[in-house]
Amino acid sequence: MSDFNFGAERGFEAYVGYEDGASSIRMFEPLTVPGLLQTPQYAVQVMKNWGVRPEAIASKLELREERKQRIAFRSPVQCYILDEAVIRRSVGPAMREQLGHLGRMAQIPAVTIRIIPFSKGPYFAQRGPFVLLDFDGRVEKILYLESTRRGDLLITGANEQIVGLNFPKVEDPGDEVARYEAEFQCLLKLALNPAESLELIDSVAEELAL
Image 1 (tube, rainbow, N blue to C red):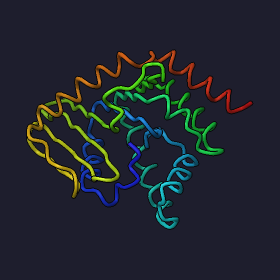
Image 2: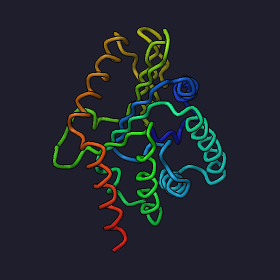
Image 3: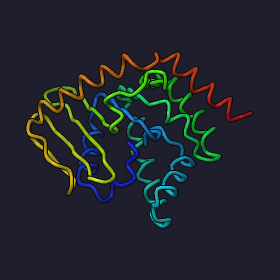
Image 4: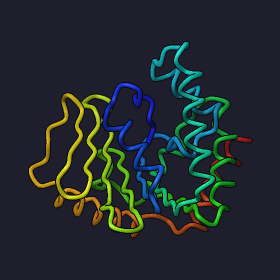
């Protein structure tokens, strides 16, 4: 997730707390590199383009790095599915370094990065990013949806919802979680396998070098 609005959203604050204990993180992102995979240079450029106040950027980066360090220390299973637009959309001089970082992250045993190529056409999840968290023990999975215009929606287990001011509650949280679970499986079928995805990332990085 881009997580640039986390300071104002109760949903994201709660999400980070759950993320710290998750045994697996499954994430789909159609527009930008997920925060956990971003380089500082890429993050700064995107935040500037999104109108984040200059005085707020440093604190957001610091919190982001702390979050990444906690994930790296625990090393939960991570699967990131990205639309090809994520690696094609130029973010100035930061992009080549960012693509190289994705390639290095993909070499970590606990991390899988898969790309959905443009050739697959439109699909359901292009409506927006989402995250599914799984846990060891009896803690039920978490669904987190992010919307910069409507706030965030966090569904814990089958009942509890934490919503942004303009994000409507869903009638059946359990069904909503199950729907996104099924959608993630569909995305896996659309995506290139990990080796093919890494080849595409490397290819785009080489194009930027020309």
